[in-house]
Image 1: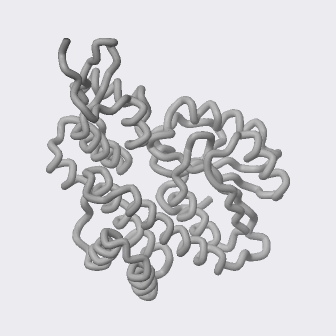
Image 2 (image 1 turned 90 degrees about the vertical axis):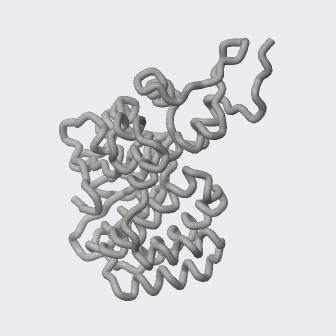
Length: 282
């Protein structure tokens, strides 16, 4: 009997560590020849640690909008070049502080960057590139999940503070922000909430991973005139489209349904549902 390699990972391990679905991993395996799983005598697939690192890089590249066919055929060094943004001293310093888990330094650097920028260029020039950099480092194993989570917590604190400092304007309307069941990406939702609040809308942040019925009930109770749903690249597709169709039917009359995030462009259009691009608001 062939000896089984130690420290092999199941498809469940791969999915939980990369955010990819089992279907996507198997499609890449079949279509692009990677990953190449180890077959156990039972027939089950197992994956090596190096497969996990590369799949993390691939998942990050696809999340940033690169084609899966290009990503799958790129070397690890080529993937890193795709993922690493052009050098910015502010982002470099923040990344070093994140690596050292220096929370106070991160907060100070973010405040300094924000001091010279309005909220929109701050998100575009500092926050988004930092998240790309951290995501790439997590993907290749040079940052641990504890460091990635610390960055997220620091950014969430700041984004909430900035949003709560905005005052809604009379007659501007109200928006509810949430994500669908299974979608747990929060930072994009907080960035969108800040964008809405900065334009004078009353902004109600419901959170992530919510049943469709709960989102619709909250929209009625909070008397909002629009609901914005965040979709990551991992949650794009027909499952989310069916949930959105259900949500659209449940919303009160006159309440608009909007979708944003990197998964919005990869979800088939629904009549009467508008797509948000970047940090635009509707």
